[in-house]
Amino acid sequence: LVSVGPFHEMSADGHEKLNAQALRMGDISLPIYAYRDKWSGYLLKIKLLPNSRTAAAIGHLFLDLVAEYNATPIRVTTDKGSEIGWQSLIQESLRCVNICPSHFFHLFILPI
Image (cartoon, rainbow, N blue to C red):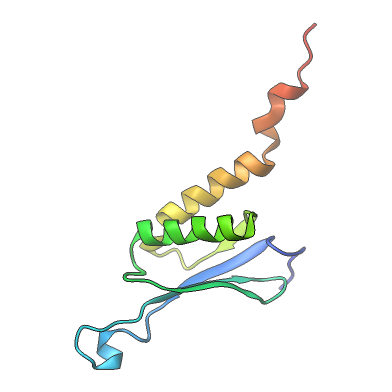
């Protein structure tokens, strides 16, 4: 497993081992979602969320991560759960704006 450098590839997943059934404290649940950089192994963000299974919550958390580090990862590896829908769209859009040559193609066309 090789990564070129920081923010080249990031892993993300939710951890629900501390849910209401496991804690046995009534309706109390501690859903956690985390992002880890593959190159450094550094845990970039870990957050306790009210619900880590909604696309809106994970999309918002991903935007918080991008704003905090002022960087967009080239690749995000996830488990393809239903909660990553917005995250995938946001990451793809930001990545395209930041590094897609086709986005800036019109700047290189010279008038004849």
